[in-house]
Amino acid sequence: MSDAKEQSRAQQLMGDFAPKLAELTDDVLFGDVWAREELSPRDRSLVTVAALIANGNTAQLTGHLQRAKANGLSEAELAEVMTHLAFYTGWPRAISAILVAKEVFKK
Image 1: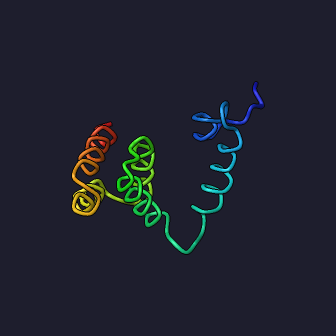
Image 2: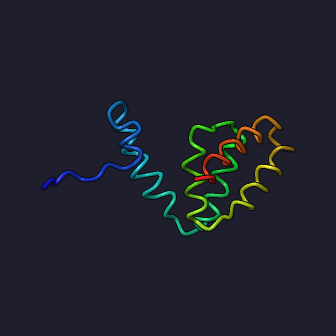
């Protein structure tokens, strides 16, 4: 039997290279900021997905689209976010996000 604690996603992705950033991601971002009551998890997911798309950060979009669905956003709502953002953040960013979403949601 192993007593090893299961690693968080942040620890898996970057813990070997940047352990402090993985710790801050777990403890501050997801342990504190995402747990605050002023916004629901659904609203936080909506804001986060929109910010990632607006900034062209598709590398983190897969995980946050999955989280958004788990937090109650439908695929149709997320597609609408991408359509809406095409006019405010640029067509290429919206198309890139849609391509990521299509991969995420076909699973």
